[in-house]
Image (cartoon, rainbow, N blue to C red; front, side, top):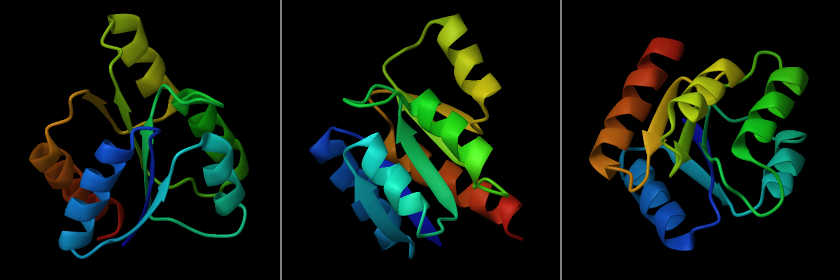
Length: 122
């Protein structure tokens, strides 16, 4: 599957991409939201793994753009250090399938990615 990851933390992005690639997925990594949006205008991805806090836009703003501009929108997962109840609700209401708190347990992330992809693309 084709997966795009968006996070301004290089180490985290590389770790996630490496693990997902080891699982047989093809990963594209982005450090800025606008770069991902630009790619989404030309490429299709089966899943998006997004950080909430980014230098140019928030992950929730990216989710809103995806839901308004891509039909059908790919499933999305949100990574964040924000753990307040209202943040979790805002992320889920925006349209993410799952919310991961940082530091991310990478093995759990990979398992959830694989489970979500199995459900979405049987």
